[in-house]
Length: 130
Image 1 (tube, rainbow, N blue to C red):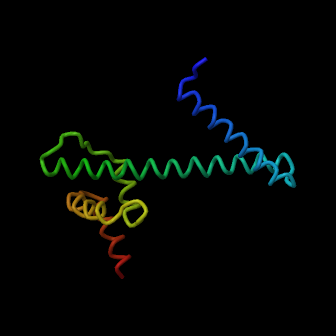
Image 2: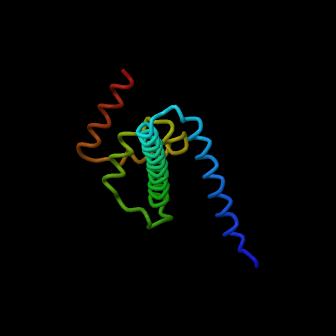
Image 3: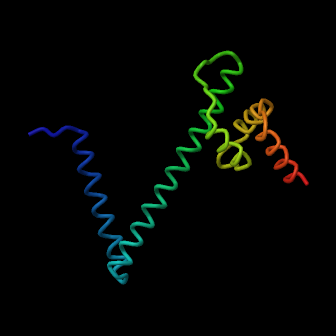
C-alpha cells in the first residue's frame, strides 16, 4: 500500500516530537507534575510571544515598504493604519525591528507625520540625542 509523501513526513515529525517529549520528561523527572505543567505553559507562552514579535516585525516592514512604493507613485496598496504607526513610533529605535534599510524608510515616513505624534516623536528624538 502506497503512502503519500506528506503523510510520511507528518508521521516522522510526530514521531520525532514524541521522542523529544520523552527526552524532555526524562531530563525533568526530578520536577513534580505541576512544575512540569508550569514549565510547558511557560515554554508555550514564550513561543507565542516570539511568534507575535516576528509577525509584528514583518507587518511593520511590509507597512513601510508599501508606504514607500505608494509615495513613489508605484503602489496603491498602502493604507494608513494608526495602530501600525503607533507600533512603529514606539519601536523605531529597535534594531531588531528595523534594520538600516527600513530605518531609512521610516525617516522619510516621519517627514509626513502630523499633529501630536509629530511633536511627541520630536521630543523623544531630542531626549535620545541629549
